[in-house]
Image 1 (tube, rainbow, N blue to C red):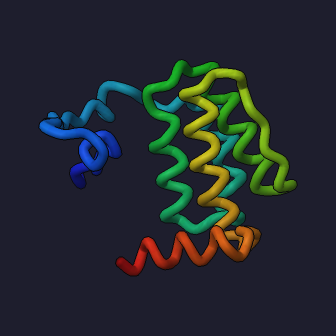
Image 2 (image 1 turned 90 degrees about the horizontal axis):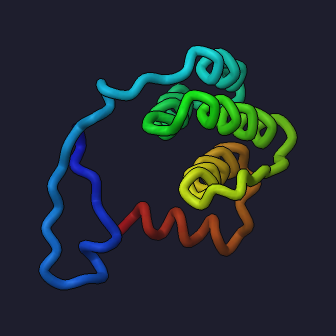
Length: 119
């Protein structure tokens, strides 16, 4: 598992990060996985895997809701929110990744993303 970079480590002093890998303890809801499988031709294999990984840790019903929202976004570019901050933050990141692959990022944002990647 690649060690994750935490924002708090960049903005706060004297922060230690303890990395754990709990993915094996949380599975993807089969209904959510079936729903997301419709994206296999709409996004790259790498992004598809990332989307699956980002549903882990959420309740099975919420995983399905998130999967439906991601499919709607990928096909229609309509972003839905849930009112749950953690879920909506995750969806927002996933929407941005899909938007990047679909070539619909705004010019200024696109430049920021690509400049950040090149640093």
